[in-house]
Length: 99
Image (cartoon, rainbow, N blue to C red):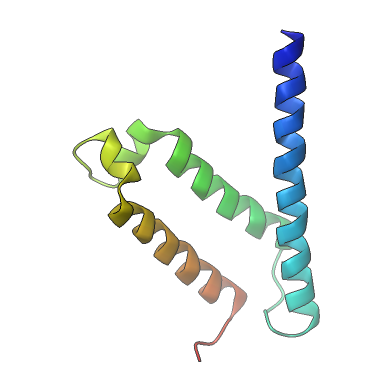
């Protein structure tokens, strides 16, 4: 049990470091007027939540995405769909104009 707790803490710390890095990028982009002013923490949590739901809830993702098999969620086509969606989501949310 102690090992699980230590591992959970280690994972949480790494995820938090990734969160801080991403938040820093967003804060700098807002400061430099590259992004519109958004709630940075909620933006990062939204992206993390989507990715986590997609990767850890295969059965639910399969149902939501209308896929036949849970393994279909992890096919390249679906991964590309997720990337495209996140790119569009952030582009629109952050007010990034296409060039």
